Length: 297
Ligand SMILES: CCCCCCCCCCCCC/C=C/C(=O)SCCNC(=O)CCNC(=O)[C@H](O)C(C)(C)COP(=O)(O)OP(=O)(O)OC[C@H]1O[C@@H](n2cnc3c(N)ncnc32)[C@H](O)[C@@H]1OP(=O)(O)O
Image 1 (cartoon, rainbow, N blue to C red):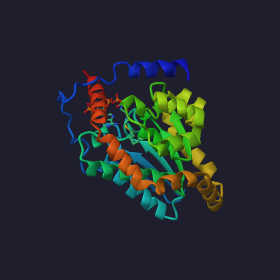
Image 2: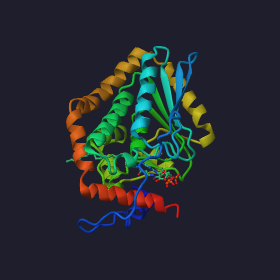
Image 3: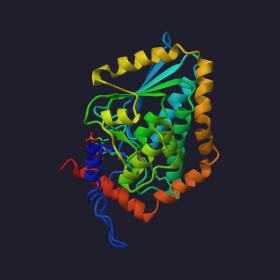
Image 4: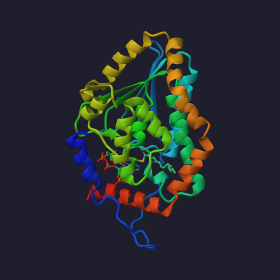
């Protein structure tokens, strides 16, 4: 771990999670109603000539992965997957400075066990569809991408990140007092190896672009205004490989990881629901939400 990453972790952790007395009422209320507009959260541009689609995530303020967002995302993905003319997919953000803020914390705070289960099933679905996609998938990471946002990028075949030092990426779940599930961990380990994953996950490391490139979390850095052209260039190289050979190879590499979740899906949902609805975890999430709000005052 670099000194800069270590310093960031220490800063993020200090005073992060206050402790409440038993039975003490939480002092702040959070709106549970954000992002419920009917405007599309995903815009898809498909070019039938090149066979490449670009998915623009456009859910203000930070493309957090709510149930609505995930549902729309999966429907869009399924449509592209079924279109035999679509061979490649680039995923990027239309929101300034953020690729995706990860799972919508409001979906995990103060919700019924049934709703949490429904939400988690949608998170699994997004991962299964993207990690198992037959298409060539490239993440054009034009902003910060913590936790579930990082997972989304990790499911792609190739990651290009904007070379902007204030952007960060990583699986920072432990900083929120929560645990990255085994399939988040597996996806990261498949990309950067066991040791780097072990450290990154325990410490909740968020890497800046050059650190992310160093550990192999991203494959390429480019100036932000060149991110889509770089993704298109890379896509052209990948499109030159015969689809069937590439798809079988991808499946060979990823199938064991995918099978592990597929055969444990219900248990994984139950684990999530039991974990996230615990009083202590709800308090940690509330404390984290407070910190996010306080950033502005
Ligand atoms: C026995 C075994 C047991 C194990 C069992 C395991 C079970 C599983 C356990 C649970 C697993 C859960 C896995 C979780 C994954 C996640 O993805 S959790 C989410 C993590 N995300 C974050 O930590 C990101 C937090 N956000 C930020 O750091 C910043 O917002 C940003 C993305 C860097 C953008 O910064 P900036 O542009 O400065 O915007 P802000 O002002 O901070 O935010 C704008 C508004 O957006 C709200 N917001 C931000 N992130 C989220 C989010 N993730 N969800 C919901 N809302 C978010 C923020 O509060 C601001 O709101 P307003 O003040 O109302 O404008």
